[in-house]
Image (cartoon, rainbow, N blue to C red):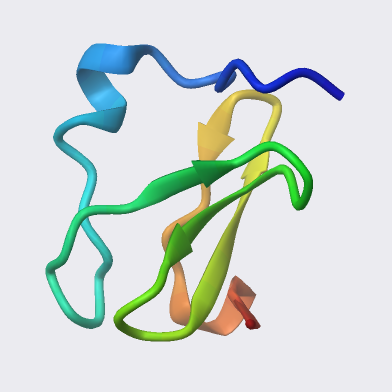
Length: 59
């Protein structure tokens, strides 16, 4: 797996956690967007972030 996010950097800079409204961070190991404030990892499927709480995994 690569450290480079499959999400455009411009978009990634604008994405926020749907729970806390804090910035998300790309984690290449998990292949997910992390919200450290909420303790959640949001999946990215086919390059599309899935920012649904029911789809998130607890950290």
